[in-house]
Image (cartoon, rainbow, N blue to C red):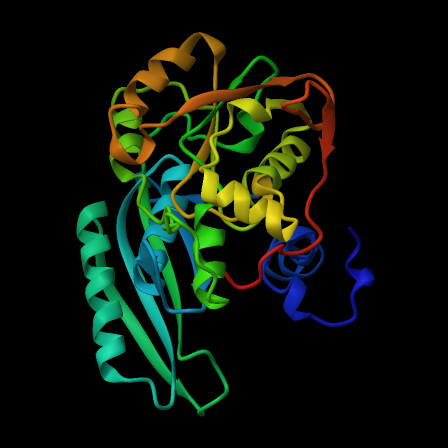
Length: 336
């Protein structure tokens, strides 16, 4: 998508989708220096005798607290998961806080405590930070930016360019819960049972895969753009075709009902504790055996395959096939 389609950044397109890809390729990479590798959740580089991965992300979720998490746990888990997707052991994080005038200190304390707990769970330390205060009504109370650094221990590290025809695609759990959980609180919608975000660190299962040296061609966490958006990006970057079976993708009933009611496609609803893994077919079952021993990935299953060609095709419950297209914007704005 050429950047010329837009003259300004709009709220509907400011957070993800194809506009973000266009901004990266047409503005940021030329300005800051292009790399030869495909875009990934974290960037690898050599530092002395160590291979390091670094990532950064900003979190602007509203409301600040939602079922299953809050902006603090979201910020820590998001950066931890990005490092894991690059085959790195997360080591340290930094945190920058944009505080709106009038934010209760009790709210900030609660968020900080949530970040501490999430960091302890993921085995990382928050070692540096910064605060800035903006005028009242110029923000949503609190924004957080986290940057993470990790030591790459997977060899070779998972990356889009390693995806091959014949790879099995593993999904680590049910999809759509984060987007629907945030939307429900924001718009005062009630679901029975309530929908809780899947916000979580994938540290434990991924570290076991790395330590046991399981072959992992690529991994991608399914945040903005959801499963469908991630698969479309990876298929394009790796120049392969992806075929998935929608019937094998778990979606809890309240999420499916909410999507049906609101005209949303759960494949493109954001997650904050789910990933898609691309592994050799011969190693798929052994990978599942590891993932299914961990609470955060207990529902892991094979949902598709990589083939020669291009694009992403989904087999529906009716046996028909539909082509998945990259989202042009967010179905649900500002949920991460």
